[in-house]
Length: 128
Figure 1: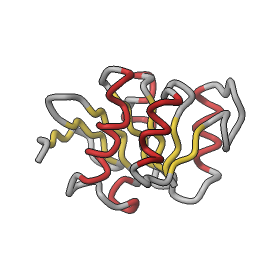
Figure 2: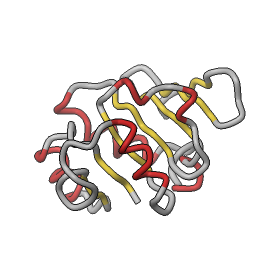
Figure 3: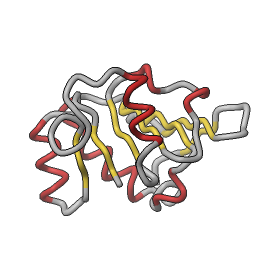
Figure 4: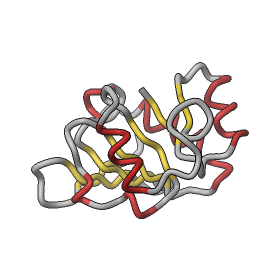
């Protein structure tokens, strides 16, 4: 299940839907509007293998790695969120739900930076 934070715009959500990418958004069709970061983490732990996409850099922390979810911090412009979500979902290292679990990933124009559960150092991946 792909979950968008409230900070992803309606137009970007609609673009993802037009590409037939299955998503839900906090405050629209899952969770509730105005959830705090710690509430979102608890909410994700109660879901079945969610991948959470946000533009909030507060989610890019190694201590947030958890086997029950994947966190994706989109370090890109608001208008680029959908494009980079789709790119990540097609990347060979992260193209399945199972491959995203236990990861906290920063997505940027240059590369992907990843914290993994039980791994102490950041891992860097190039775009294909």
